[in-house]
Amino acid sequence: MADLESGHLFLTYVIPIRRGGPRNDVSFKQKLRIELARLPPAHQTPATEKTEYAAPFARNRRTHFARMFVLDNVVYNGRNGQDALVGALRNVGTLTPQHVDGLRSAYLVFTADVDAVVREGDPLPDDLDPDAQRRVRMAYARTLWDTMGKEIAAIFGNCHGFEGVSSGEAFGAYLERCHIETTMPFHDYYLVPPEFHVLPVRALALAVLIPGGIALGALLLRILGLEALFGLNTLLLAVAAFLVTLLAFVLAVRHALRNGAMPLAPARHDDLPSVLKALYIQQAFADFVAEHQGRDAGALAAGFGAFLDRNVPADPNGPTQRPGVIASDAPQPRARV
Image 1 (cartoon, rainbow, N blue to C red):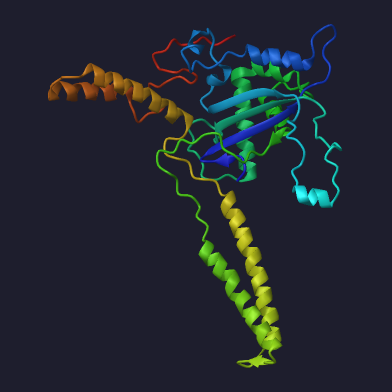
Image 2 (cartoon, rainbow, N blue to C red):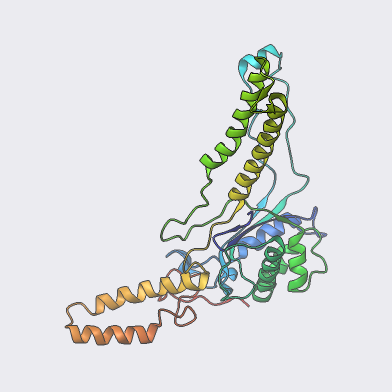
């Protein structure tokens, strides 16, 4: 299913940017670029750790990935490909320009990978119908408004139709108008390969080929002059078998399409709180191993018990790593107010 995969929603919004600009000021497109440039990055590298403030998307524990950029126009990939011989026979003038697609305005593209839950801490779903997906998108929009509403207003205020948006609910409705289905996921957390939805190709092929063979055989017998076979009219048998073949083919194609649209099940510990907890435990355990080198069995057992009590590995809401930082002991950025 589009947007949903492995318990996450992979979101894409394409929002038209207002044309022109305020009087005696830069264009709305340039103002939007300035606001995007002002967003502090996540502290995910030694270089970005030097920035003072935290990335605004790190103020919630649903966003695995987020990106915003300005799309000025579509990329021109050159002329439509055509066989040279066919073009020569059709007298195609390769010097005559073909139609080139273009956008009427620039767009803000917003992509995000989020946990497909309405409330933080809910289990990741195996599947969601379109209405449930919309509820998740609306809940995520409200979360963004509540945690980074100032930045949202500064960025989206340069976009067409944003006037009057003053709440998380209104922001979600605004994004819904610009939503585009995403058919490719942005990440993969699987520790072991998932159980893919295997298509029963052999069974589907037999379901189509068997009545197809009967139809062809009956038709051949009719052509050879045999009007009946086991008391059945060969012409009627050929027509009936052909109809069954056609029906089986349609059902097989529909089954293949449904199979391909089924989302993969979420992996274990695939939600963002669990991922952050895993990163925290990984670092804490590495420190524990380094600190307890050479200890005797009693001291090691006591130290490990204290480690479990202190870090509570099974509780994703216990001691954990903050979103948007490269390490638990890294300098913790401030939130811009």
